[in-house]
Length: 175
Image 1 (cartoon, rainbow, N blue to C red):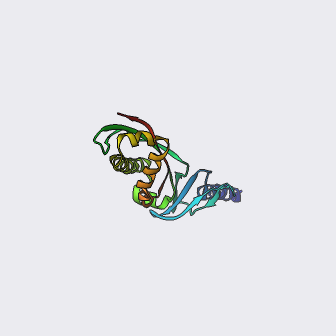
Image 2 (image 1 turned 90 degrees about the horizontal axis):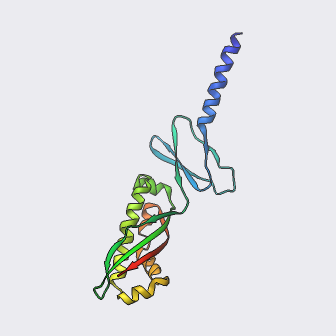
Image 3 (image 1 turned 45 degrees about the horizontal axis):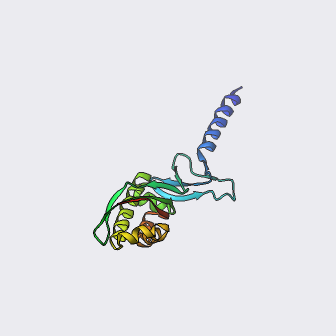
C-alpha cells in the first residue's frame, strides 16, 4: 500500500523531467539552447532526422528562431539621380537568418531589429546606386541591373548580424 503512494509521484516526476528535457526542432527553424543566458548550442532540423534532442531540464532554456526566407517591404523613399532628378523608389527584400548566434548577440533575436537594420542598409545602398546613375539608366536598369547593383553595393554588411540577403527587388520607380 505504501509502495503505491511512492511509485505514482516518482512516475509523475519522471514524466515531467522527460517532457521538460525534450527539444523538438521543426523544419524551417533553429532551436537555440541557452544555459544561464549563455548560448550552449543551436539545433537545426534539416529533414534528415526527426528533430528531437535533449537539454538539461530547468537549467537550460530554448528559443525558436525561423530559418525560412522572410519578406521585408521597405517604405518608399525619395532619391536623387546623378542628373539631379528626384525619383521615388519602393522595394522589398528577401532575407533569412544564416547565423542564429550572431543574430541573437547583435540584434537580441528580434526580427523587428533585423528589419530596421535591413531597411537602413538597403536605403543607403539604394541612395548610393541611384545617385550614381542618370534617370534614364535607372529606368532602363529595371530588368535586373538595378537589383544586381544594389546587391553588389550592399555586399556583406548584414552578415555580421547573422543575416543573409537573398534578393532585393524594386517594386516601383516613380518620377
